[in-house]
Length: 321
Image (cartoon, rainbow, N blue to C red; front, side):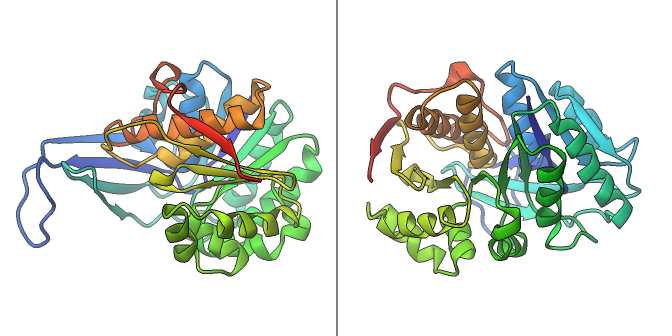
């Protein structure tokens, strides 16, 4: 089973335009949708669509509309009661595939609820192969929350594998505490990798776009050296890099028409974990990861792909080191 912890889930509202977004003008939407979102929720959704067991842990009020949206996608859930409602993140997609995101502020999650989230995750981990901790942190939650959660999980379920996908201050906190709270897998993009190692992440991404992956590999190896077994770096159109202490592989995406990038990174992470859980090799797991992310990018809004949508045959992997 794959357990996910999403401290700051969201209702993902997607507004699709048939033209370019022009600030300061009136637009008429081609379509509008609401879906259950948040990084961990998206991972759990992908695992559910692959007919594999999963459990999504998150905070929510008893009658929050968000819970109905999660149940609509048949994801098994464990909620921790809070008073405020889940935020709404609004994405505007243009005909070109370009997206603009307006993310709402998360609800207040007090100390008691924070501890309940960690306890619920630790309890579920007893039957899990992987635990995914993912996303931003809501109001009232300290930036070292993931450090605390990983340390608790290591004590409660020492055999479980931990994946982390976050950014900004929570990522910086992790970088400062890898000696006591190293996950087994980190899934940064180029910018977040820069936050991990104190480098210019934008420069790393720009070099990768030109086909120079040396900077990304060197930065990822710094993270490997601090106890993180797998560093899965998503690089948009350039594909994704998987870096371990012993090697590095690059996967290039298949031909696609970009519709929406929302949820693509989460789908990539789910694809990798599903492959690992099925006993696939590291190159095969990376191939499936990029195939999942590419399939998500070709779908509207926060649509999560099913396994039959993957184009594995045109997702290429080569070893770099």
